[in-house]
Length: 61
Image (cartoon, rainbow, N blue to C red):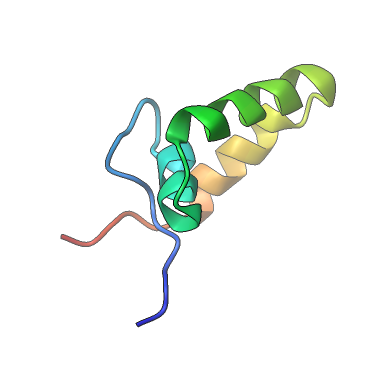
């Protein structure tokens, strides 16, 4: 069975970071820190997060 990128269950805002963390089997906090760093350094982290929140499907239970 192949992995599927979906929004995660440990939601803080939209579940994007926890979904990415579940997909790559890593800690959601690490992914959240990376998004904040990209937002501060490049200014594109927030826009990228919003786009992913729209594109990534919710998890089917």
